[in-house]
Image (cartoon, rainbow over all chains, first blue to last red):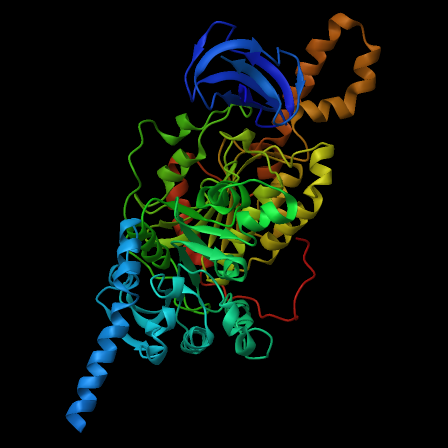
Amino acid sequence: MKKKQVLCTMAGTMWKVLVAPGDTVAAGDTVAILESMKMEIPIEAEIGGTVDTIDAPEGTVIDEGAPVLTLR
Amino acid sequence: MTHRKIEELREKSAKARAGGGEKARARHVEAGKLLVRDRLTLLFDQGFDFEDGLLAGIHRDLPADAVVTCIGKVHGRDVAVIANDMTVKAGSWGHTTFLKITRLQDVAKEAGIPVVYLVDSAGARVDEQADSYLGRRAWGNIFYNQVVTSGIVPQVCALFGPSPAGAAYIPALCDLTIMVDKQATAMLGSPRMAKMTIGEDISEEELGGALMHCTVSGLGDVLVKTDAEAIAKVREYLSYLPSKWDDKPPQAASRPPKTLAKPLSEIIPSNQNLPYDVKLLIDGLVDEGSFFEVKALFAPELVTGLARLGGMPVGIVANNSKVKGGVLFVDTSDKATRFIWMCNAFNVPLLFLQDVSGYMIGSKMERAGIIRHGAKLLSAVCEATVPRISVAVRKGYGGGYVAMSGSSTHPDAMLALPTGMVGLVGPEAAINALYAKQVAEMPAEERDAFVKAKREEYAQDIHVMGMAADRFHVEAVVEAEHLRDELIARFRIYSRRPSPPLRRRGAVHQV
């Protein structure tokens, strides 16, 4: 089965992660803010669930399509 | 004798109008689709004025040879329509189908009236290829006609069902394609062929469904839920355009913009890095309910759409910082370019709303050809001869400023809001480039204060009320609340400017 993950919409540096493992998120929630091209870019969860792991902690240089966090 | 012939004509006409067999028609309707003549009823103001080739195929039990070609009125203006009948041999193309389609294409081009394609077809018939595929008079003429007609009269497609292989080029060669979700598909090779050739297991919907084309490939411009909605969108789209390229777009009565919850000056964040939804700004500028968004689901970091300003049609190209920071990517350039081409072709003035920190960087982007794509957008902007106004809403940095119709691309006016900031680079990058060595050499405790002061100084410099206004690089700095009136007044004047004559065969564009 495909993992339930929130993926990064573009390349940049993870600036703020707004949730922690155990938190419940709903589809459409902003879960993190990416910094890229001088912009603060909100990362939204496309699906809801409970946060299992944070895959891109603050400060991580992250590529487009890479996981920001995993849900369970 | 005469009476018998009249009876025969009536019988045959009725049979042809009924379309395919009862079973095929029932299956079509059960699938939630409208029959071809019901689609036409919805499209035209009041039925059509005349039809070609109703009796084509009648002796071969192929009513109208699977296509209705006719001319009728949409908003009181003549429009040519080519509509496949899915209930006759799956809407496929035979030789007389081809003759009917190309004849109406010729009539529309010569008369200077838009062509609407209502597509729902299994494509070309292999058993009719001898007369219809290879020669000078063959199916390929349909595409040839679309290409040579492009930019002369509007061509719009509503895709209700399949358009496989060659037939997929009808939507592709139209100016705008509307797709019905879960019904429309376009693909060169079927899932069966994909399985045989490259071992790919994929459904039709995933391979070439409407949702895929409207979000990923960019072939679809507008995604709708039903046949009726698709037809309503065709009518709406045509209301912004002239019947042919050298006419002016139709004016409507002016309507005030939508009342917003907050004034525009409070909606647009002055912090350049904070995202907001530019569609709110568009709502605050255009006549209420007049925004027809094109490619809403594709490359949403940039918004494109037709709208009315004081009743006058305009095309809007706006960076949307709400999505991916409003940064320009390869798809963004494709989206903007094609929209600009369409507006320029049909005399629709262009409004650019700038809020862009530039083109995306990095090896992935370079390999994807971001420079080629940027060059293509530049070509489209520089070659657009319709009235053109660009507004620095917030930042316009580097290539982004130029590509969004910056002053150097010769718009009729470069305006700015008081939040506008235009420069080669933003403050962070500028100070880094100018003072990196000096900062490295100074005591650590002094660095932050120095960098902050220099950034602020630089931000003042590139603010529109700095050098841009002082040296007349912008025509005017306008408060957001006054921008609508300013735009209406300026477009009214610039619309009087004659278009420059065309003096070459064609440019060598990047793509």
